[in-house]
Length: 62
Ligand SMILES: [Zn+2]
Image (cartoon, rainbow, N blue to C red; front, side):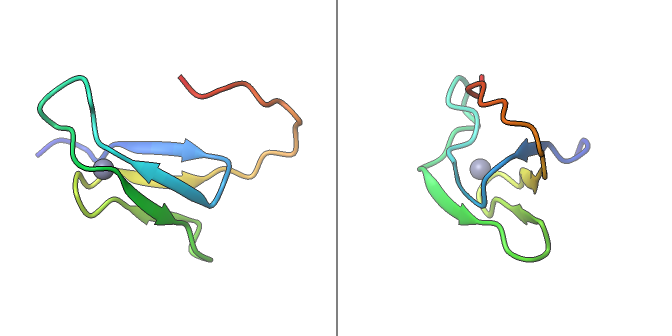
């Protein structure tokens, strides 16, 4: 297994559906980042990390 994918997000309520462009996709699952500041997707194992960002930059995620 390779290193765990980590994805920085700026909100606590996120969803994951894996990599929809490949066979690694999975049904959309909603995840809620708690006080630990991160959460692992139970389907694909990606780790979502809450990024505290003071800026008001609201660029959409790719
Ligand atoms: Zn996932």
